[in-house]
Length: 205
Image (cartoon, rainbow, N blue to C red; front, side, top):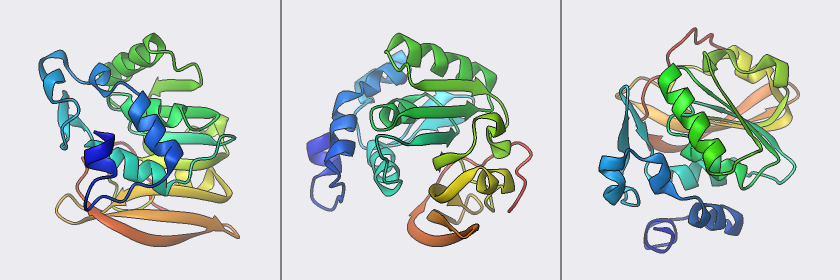
């Protein structure tokens, strides 16, 4: 997977820490048993409740764009299977992850504990509201698409922090990297994508 999908022709993942994390985390453990033969293929897979586990390249790309540091505290919105949180857990000090579908949140939390990710805190809830009591965060990753950045996420990001988030309606989404400078989010579009829509309160910035 790492050799052909992340470092292969036409792919651009170069961060050695990200590549090591992608090589270490057992992706098949986060995929439904009936689909485990496809766990390392280059496409997303359904995990139930209309949600998916993103293709390996997108997981690695978003992680690399976030520029994770060993001392970072990271908020993830949209736990899904828990795979992205497990990758982040290899790279940063603390991961806080929120999933709005309670069954998925419970399953991901159990899998993360079973696989030994002690620096991940997971809970069910409305991710558009963030995790105020644990804020501020050095970085925020969003794996579902609102049409605008939810205001609480912008507020809970540290000065100098980064957000990677898909923005837009289902037919026209862009993966966007934002940096907080003097309290304002500076935006840079990096890749056309297609993610499930964000649900919940979704307060805009």
